[in-house]
Image (cartoon, rainbow, N blue to C red; front, side, top):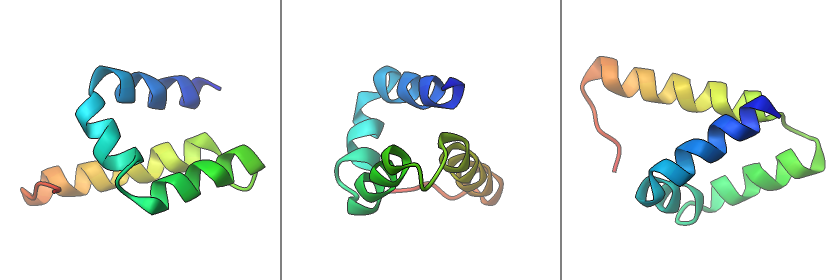
Length: 64
């Protein structure tokens, strides 16, 4: 549950980002459903997000 707390804290600290990522993208809702169903772990999602963020920062890209 530590990863769940970390993910939630990011969404609450940056609500605009949380809305864009969590609400505007249907895939995010699907992923959270998979977490609730036990198909995916919070840490899997967090690692994927961290990987995407680090790749974006290293290449100088910004996500829309």
